Image (cartoon, rainbow, N blue to C red; front, top):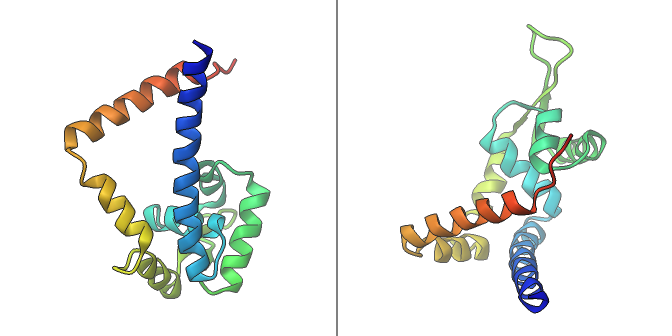
Length: 146
């Protein structure tokens, strides 16, 4: 039983490492960090997202994400916008340079794109089954919060 537990944990660990290496390769190619690349992707998927929501989606603290955004602003890849209807809110969105950088990440030269396409070429039923198993495993491994 313990051996099987180790095999399962090791399997997830190896997949996590492989995904991280792919993302790091693309981030290095673009001259940014992995966290910056993940932030750009999340911002592109959630235009005009707030800092707190971005921190939640990245599973990082507000202060960590604030520093990441500072560096992305300095690089000209994102902008902070204060909406006139709520001067206390700060929204973040991609600049044209940020959009172009993400386009390069998903270009035909991208090893990340090629590898993700290989996964997406699996039969739809297998992908759905995999995701179902992931949800089941996550529910069994999650700790109930009081």
